[in-house]
Length: 315
Image (cartoon, rainbow, N blue to C red; front, side, top):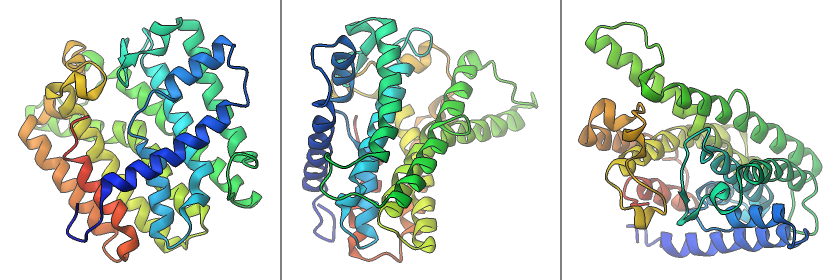
């Protein structure tokens, strides 16, 4: 519980359940006997933090509106996030066996089924944005849906998450050209590369999540700007902590293996800065995130609590 009396655990539980209920309604429109549907369900309903959809709803609430209006975007964001995890786990990418405490999609089914399950989630996310009626109690008007579709597509695509994943793959074995071979200069270049890469791979979808919540409730431009600033710092801090947990996290709690970054000789914040300096950096980023929403009232307390949670989480 925070100093304000806000209970994050209760907020997360309630909003995760709302998201899960809507995702279940989406899945019930498909034949459960189909292998493709089973693969989609296996990955989409495996649990997880649901951080992106919860951020969308928290942002809508921070703008003083009914956060249920953000549920269509929230579910679309979670479907796109899950597709990205399915594809990231494939042998051609990160080659992981566990995700959210369960076998990865390609291990449970097959590589080809996993690829198609990811494809299905990505495409149906945009269908849900366009046609949310029948799944959600409250829906944004068509003009807002169009804005949300463009926002999320941009964040997920070639100038966002996908390009970030490409840069991440190129960083394996430190093969990416960082310019100067000078020790200090090279480290500075590598840090700039990491920040840019994760600003795309992780950050773009987190910024889109927070912004989508504001767009869903027709927030003013100055509120959207402050929220995007919050989300930019939050997203980078989240990735720094992800890198730290990959080094020292408990696989049982995380639901996935640890140490994979070191095995693949990936460029990470702990590898570049060290563990303690990485923690310090994450804390500085969270301070900046909180400063960005300092003028918001108590309705932004969920966003503040989520920011504090990001640097104390163990999964």
